[in-house]
Amino acid sequence: MHINHSLSKSLGQKTLKTKTRIAATKISNNNNSAAPSAITSDTITKYLINISAMSKSTAFRYRLRLGNFDRFVYKVYETNVDNLMQKIKKCSTDPYDVLSNFIAYLQDNNNISTLTLKQWVITAKNFLEYHDVDISPRKFKLKVKFPKVVKKEKQALDKEDIIEIINACSDIRLKTYVMLVAATGLRASEALSIRLCDVNPDADPVKVFIRGEYTKTKVDRFVYLTDEAAKQLKIWIQYKYRTRRVCLPDKNREGRTITDYRTPIKNDTDLIFSVYETENHVPNIQWIYNDLNNHFGKMLDRIGKGSKEYVGGNGKHRPITFHSFRRYVKTTISDLGYQDYSEWFISHSGSTYWRKKESEKAELFKKIEPYLTYLDYTTLERKGADVQTKVDVLEVENNMLRQRDATNSDAIANLSDQVMKLMVEVKEMKTQK
Image (cartoon, one colour):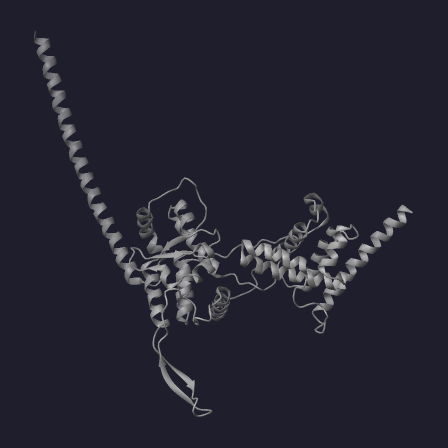
């Protein structure tokens, strides 16, 4: 009896896995599916509200992941998440089998990387644990198997690559944004969250304040701008708020238009990289990012650097992203010998003992500024000439020291000869006595 029960349980699991594969295969072709397009589960909604209190952006990502889990449960188990949760708590359904089947579902129905798949399953696991489903870490490791994550080498950029990319940006907004992240190492969302009032052009060097709401560490911070980036930012702001000619529909004559000249109203709270902002419409940073990223990808394709064969084998990512500039800034500053400063500059925790006054941080930035300047050749040549002048002065001083050292050596040799002569004379006088 025990053998038959075990056999039937095993067959039931195999049948469920087969059903998972079939359901996953049919989804992409079944446009008239009755599966819910929006999350209707109360348990998922409750979980998302809890996550939203911590971070709205995290809750947004979790909603996308749990939306897939919701559709998976409907397709494979032919029920909703709330009912499945009750079955798991009554021990009629194994949560480890549910997560394993979710992996099979994602592999067959989603063109995602292995790392993304793992994150989605972990989110589903955390969701079950939040609702008092006991999942043993040991059993989870033994029963739920993930495909191996293939780690790819991150493509490194050099200064010539960045110069080529900046010069290829035909859109002034994209050019300004790329130049900003390439000079500061800001994260994509941090750079997009900058408002007009966050820029302090009177500081030396120019400072940009980053609000803690948009930093990864949730801590306010600031970054310095190179002269080149500050000038480009000023050019973009002037261009954004320029007076332009617009065509409007003529209310008096249907089908006709009238021409008018408009100047956008400048508010200190305007996002620098937003292009449409009114009192009734506050732009979403994610939308701005999607727009800039789309233009950035097309620009990379145009110059032959947009191949998608690099990451994860799924063709969804490019080897060069906005984050590539952050890696370049960190590497450049570290190679100059300022390891702790590089950690502070890109907002990493770094050493808890490294502390500098703001004036000292500004002085360090001026030393590395030429290495984060890309198109301002006049400034580079001037600073290069200054460095060469310092080298020439040091060389002259070195030659003077060498000559002084040679003179001192000759004087010492002469004194040594005189001492020897005196010693000989003293010895002769002692002999005569």
